[in-house]
Image (cartoon, rainbow, N blue to C red):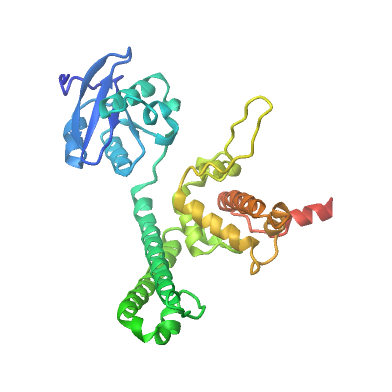
Length: 357
């Protein structure tokens, strides 16, 4: 039931806004839990401004999603208090047997009215950080596409009984162009041309990443003290976390990035589970790649590498996976410590402490 659209929202009102791609649904509650307004709103800046702009300040709860960053910024600019709920942590909504847009909006409004902490609120990064992070994501998309095309070329050649020489990704086109079987040239030479263009574009993104780190995020340089952490990971770390002071302790970064194990403890039963995989997928992937390098054969010796190798212990695949996740978690904590304190990285600090003891 649509009620008065202007008088419905005011001081002390709680709004649940269920976001979809083109049109959202909102429900407004009073302090005592009465529904005083509900309706639809276009998911555009003009539509939000017409619906919520003229109204008094209120508390608006939305869920994380594609549109939630810009919608939360737009609503805050209208002087509303916005709570961005972590959609993965609200089973009342995503596991509901009577799920629809209106009920989702009503649930958001009720949870915001009862206790905002029940929404597990998150903080979106700034518009500039989101735009700069898009550069890193675009580069990652091109790298993924290039890898898929290279695997395609190798697979097609292998299927006729031939093999292409091993080489780095950057030198792939130069190394294999003259070794494509004559019967496959019409099929694969155009693919190699695209791979060469992708390599050129990726190099351009690398230059842009260096420029961003140098001009806009100088703190990223301090993180590259750790062997295995390059320009891409350091910049992604600084942009994703944005402010080191948002965490009370450096070890809080591990759970934030989904690098801590899940818990399902009950009585005497406390099984060892996989990591939660919460938080930013892109940064977690980069930290996992750094952990693989730190534990690999080409990394320099340091406390973190020694600790990870001891954790891996035997050659079992399961132990190695646990060690990689643990090293990635410890690396995330170490990077936050270096960033927040400005300390100089000491690769053998633990060894020095043991010697002094």
